[in-house]
Length: 462
Image 1 (cartoon, helix red, strand yellow):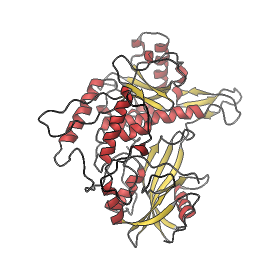
Image 2: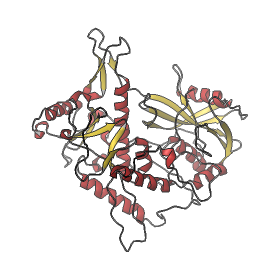
Image 3: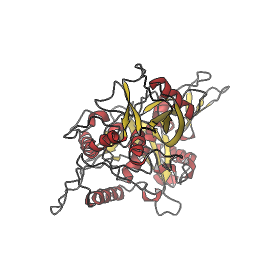
Image 4: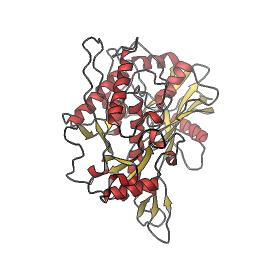
């Protein structure tokens, strides 16, 4: 089976326990966003007992209420596109009017656009405020934000290639309604998308993922928006023709669907999602967990087993089949933990859905399929805790945030993937596991610090 990429940079074991309510994310008030981001960073920095650089001797379990790329604030409290203040059809009509030169007030709401180039969203990264001379803490790292633009700043792009992301504000909430769009400008030559004095650039989504401060709810919300946008745009790039008759597929419903242009076919085409099972296999009697390595992993990294679901099988069947095929271990009880959208995989798969499970082993002898894995071993709970202990995730996040700032300033040209952004501790651990924005981390961490549940997890992505 084709393996799934769940290996990226590293973060510290810190807790982010509250998802920002939708009402706390104003649509187009950058000053408010910057002020709240500054307050969040100052609050996190000034907490007693949380030094700015955590030493490798401290281990904690992160308890997120939502995974990275989940809890998109533009999807509405009900989790639907229609729950926002502006419907897709009304937003599309207003956008066409704006692009045709109509009065901006004609649509009764604002429109904001997020440009993408070759899968990279436009981001900005202003320098953080200088620390107070009386504060012992160092300056916080720069906090990136998505660089939303008015439609007039995205010239030469027809309205039918814009993709509707959602809306926010209005309906008596004290904020003006705004519709949000994404557009691929890879073929737009010579256009400048940053204004005078603005430090912005098209930044790889994985790099932004590593650089996002998990304590900053606005940053995590914007990461989810960017992931949703990239998944839709990459789907548009790969679903150009009807799979039934081969005719051209055209966007409908404000870019959230497609339809065959052949009048005798008119097949409706929906965005692609590739479901993947990812599982932590547990030896209950000996208090061990099964971790594996692929040859492309960085040295000393171990992770969960994972694989794509085959047609005609349930999630539980996929867990048992993948475990048997890759390690020769028979699995009995399978318990659901949580799921995570993963829009940073290969372009041919615009968005994978990682569905996480605990799986209890019925046999213990390992027989590795060398075509799939480099190695697989049982690891004790104490060894796994040590792996979580030595990872200096916060240093990696700060380093990545500075890198994004340099990219936006134009002083850094290379955009490394997150696995290149890891920061080693002074005493490297014999092993480490994926970082906290990967579901593999939370499966491993949950078992190491809390034990596997006997019933489905209460972990929520809402």
